[in-house]
Image (cartoon, rainbow, N blue to C red; front, top):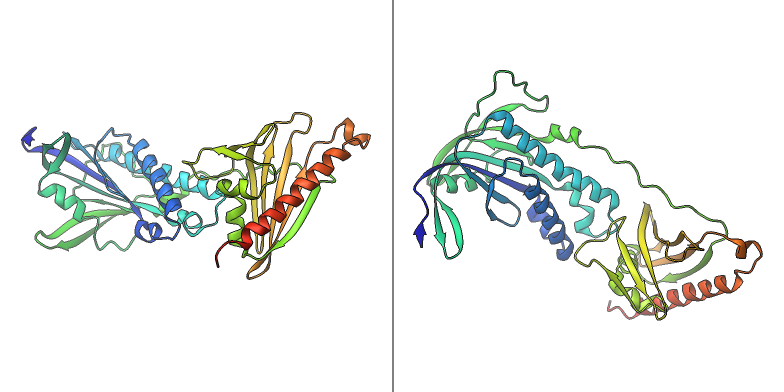
Amino acid sequence: MGAINNLRPTLFFIPDISGFTTFINKVEINHSTHIITELLEIILSANVLELEVSEIEGDAVFFYRIGEEPGFEEFARQVEVMFLKFHQHLKFYERDRICQCGACSTANELSLKFVYHYGITTIRKIGIHEKLFGSDVTLTHKLLKNDVPLNEYLIMTSVLEYPKDFKKPDWMEIKEGSSIYLGIGEVSFNFISLAPLKHKVAELTPRTQFHRYGNPVSASREMKIPLKELHGIVTDFSLRPKWIFGLRFIKNNSDQLNTIGSKHLCVMPTTSMEFVITSQHIEEGIIEYVEQSKSIKWLAPLNVVFVLKKISGDTSGVEIHIHYKKNWLSKLHLDFPLRLMMVMVAGVSLLKLKRYISRIPA
């Protein structure tokens, strides 16, 4: 273990995800940790001050930069860019998400708070790692626990200098506060609510709906399962080979959560078809979920529509509607064999789905 340098003036900056503890304790741990990972990556990508990363701490990133303290305008831009990118990502996810689990449906309740402190530190090397030490490092972390009655804010222990021509943004109202810490005493700081910044998050255009061709191929069946659980099974690609007739397996990016726009390849014994999730519409007691394929050119676009309906607390209905582009075969009524095959595939698949659900332990 050796010293790299002596005490140096250092900027300490921690963006911390508000609501992390409640969110990560949702039962859907795989989804909650995936969402948090994406948000931490957004924070890292929004590092416009080119700060160094000391540690990634579960729900926060500990940034630092040795040298002169930045000006207020420069630092305010850093906070604004990071906050807006964070919430823009959540807005995209809320519009495009498919999963209805507790973690995915409450991700939009997460937010960011920031701690800024300028002090001194020394860096020591431990094995191949470098670690910051000093009382200011400790204080920066302690400031995350404070008496500010907000969940999205910026705390600053020093007043940064304004440029003479700096016009304070309309969202920025600086207030004074303080907190008492064991072994340190009372620490005064300034804080700014970031809630007004949300009006700068861009609104998203709605996703376009798929084209509904007339006379789709349809099949339906009732299932002894609550609507939310049924939706989870139908949209889980890892389970599809268990109930989709003729499907061997699905290739998709299992490291990402499925959203509108996600693609997957359905591999069957003699061919394969690529599908993309194109829409999902949810109303009270009914969910319409759509996938589209353009793999078979003379049918493209082919839309497979799953309509899930709540019948009672523990019973739901499933409908499959296959919409495809009509062609000269259709006009001459020569697509009868194709439609018969589609009816068989849809009907047998729903029968297999019902049997699969019946074997799920209560």
